[in-house]
Structure formats: C-alpha cells, structure tokens
Length: 96
Image (cartoon, rainbow, N blue to C red):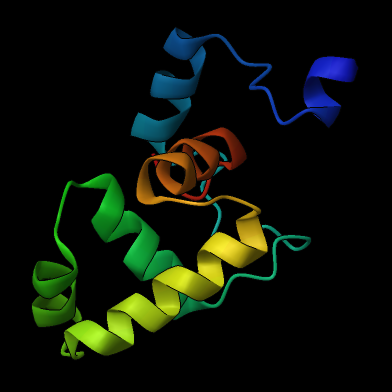
C-alpha cells in the first residue's frame, strides 16, 4: 500500500502495455489531479519529446501560452521540470 500512496505503479510493465494497446484504463484526467484538458495535451507533447514551440504549433498556441500551461501543470503535479512532469504523468496514467 505504501508504494501506491507514493505514486509508484503497481502494474507489471507487460500488463500496462497490454492494457494500453486495448485502451483499457485510459483516462482523460485523474479526478484528484485537477489537470485541464489543455494541460494534459501539453504534457502529452512533452512525453513525445516535443519542444514548447512544437507543442504550440500542434495545438495552435503561442510558445508563451504553452509555457504558462507547463508551469501550471508543474505546480499541480508538484514537480519542477519537464522530465519529472513526464515521469509523474506516466505513473499516474495521464500519458501512455
């Protein structure tokens, strides 16, 4: 239980992949996470290795707006950079 409370994934990676391929357990947002759909889109872009400019172009946003969404999602996730945000996003199931 302590692992779950600390945000650790309790599923085996092979099971997580199988569930992901079948669309099982896909979430739009964690009810407790409070991320907006736009913040989730920015997080997904980060998880794909896109720069802020690339994320902005794909979402039709300015780079500054992407940075604003990124700062807000960092604060909500309790992280300080992109790598931590992506890792947290994977652990919480926001990105696959």
